[in-house]
Image 1: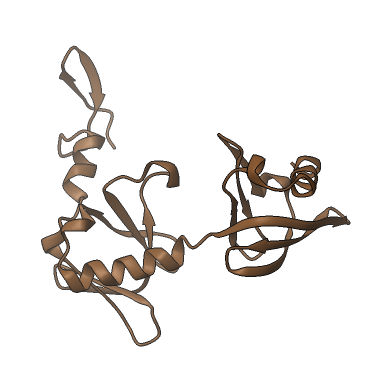
Image 2 (image 1 turned 90 degrees about the vertical axis):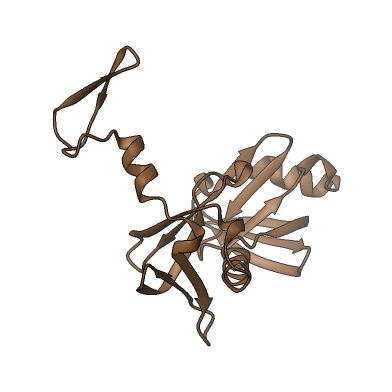
Length: 185
């Protein structure tokens, strides 16, 4: 970025050396579906080809929060650096769309907690024993910051391994589960 400014619509905006604003830079760097091909290798690693350049083992991320998905997907390499930002993924060719869908489902898989059997704490680490929509689960949470309270009684919990669990509406759980959650959150 340079210190140069551009007058526009009555206010100053920062500009790059090429004279574009940061918003224009982002818009120019957005990839359109016709520029991208996406596939999974035999080990379910996601691969993308962007204008002939191939990237393997990338991880897709929605570019906006889980509660307000937008029409953009970011692809990160093994060092968590963005290698591509795709606009309008729903317009990808069928095979690419399916590969991306599979990868996003794995990335954003969240087990839904239907009952809390126990939450015990030892040396600052809480051990959770729960029933989920996929069966019994036991996991550890090392920091209460990994338990996010959201509107309408919803909770998002991330365990020490990065797995995510969701309580869709804590008021819909049985009384014992609610009491355990209240004590822990």
